[in-house]
Length: 232
Image 1 (tube, rainbow, N blue to C red):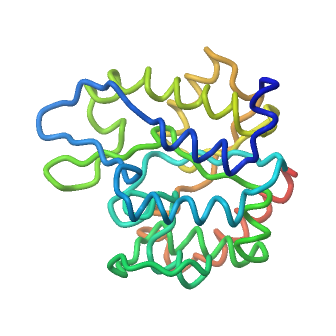
Image 2: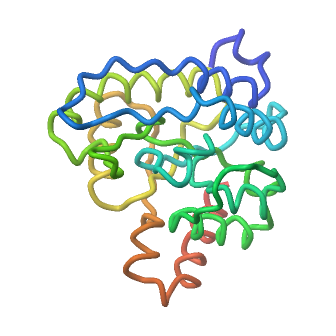
């Protein structure tokens, strides 16, 4: 992290990063970029959130998701945070449609088990391999679901990781990856080449848990808590 960046609070560094996202990606037919920060309401909510929970110089451990979805970070500007959790757990009122997102439901079960939003966000910063989302024909699309998109989005992914590591105080010892399959494999490959972190710790993806292991949510929350706490 450079000297100039050290003067920034974590909230300022994060918001500067979000505000200046400008990907130059050749999009396949039918694919669109989802940038919540271009929306005035979402930007205001993101400002409120990051100012409330990150207005300090305390280093956070990074947690990398895949990319924002339409009902969570894609509308609120805050990863894995749907309008319901933003209001009920983070205490930030909003006029967005109160649609639930499965991944947000799980992440905030972890947040609350950890001790609440203030405690969790003091230790962790959630971002994504691609901090902007994608849709294809109006449906969520992961950056790796389309071979062309995967190839063409890599420079944006690398740039995003580098910019965050340059300005947001963190440890290079380890980070977490949400998803033990494709997202983890891609991140491992990129990290082996560029040396961002000494270790990437995979966690079951929240949506996978909610779709395929819903009856065992409490067990997976415990898995998260054990690994997150052990990393500090």
